[in-house]
Amino acid sequence: MSILIVLWGFLLISLMAIGGYFMFRKFLKKLPKDDGKSVMDWEEYYMEKTRHMWKDEEKELLEELVSPVPELFRDVARHRIASKIGEISLKKHMDYIDQTTLIEGYILATPKRDHKFLRKKLKQKEIDVTPYDHLFELSKSNYANDWETKYRQSSRRG
Image (cartoon, rainbow, N blue to C red; front, side, top):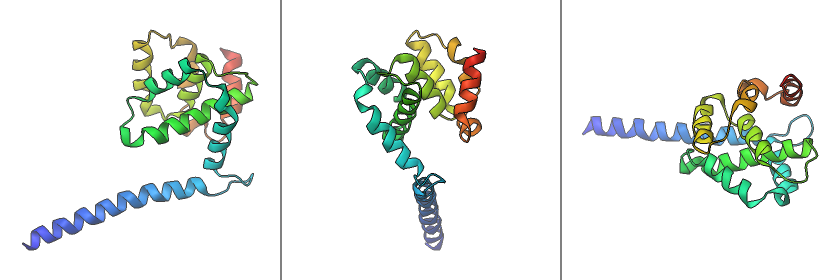
């Protein structure tokens, strides 16, 4: 009986630690940066500014590309990716979000470990990934601080 209590205690502590980890990550995203806005504030800003720029085809493509993400995290992933796509669209001064921008934003918004799923999904959709190879080199951990400069430099080379 005492082993069951000890196991139950470890389970509860583990679950609380996992929950605390995710809550702490969200807390860090809500902290204001140098410009006075948090990461989440910027995500909301880009979502609101580009909501009218999405066409049905691109919305459907985004849904298909996000489909490998576990359902529990899919809404968060979709929001983060869509905001990065919106950010790129605004920086390019576009009138609407096209497939190229959608794929660029998706690549830049996802960590390197998820790129294999994206490549597989794009291959299923018969979309050539060679124009985006330079973007796959910029993982979230590599570009996060200065992504725009690196993106411009890689666009000039390509």
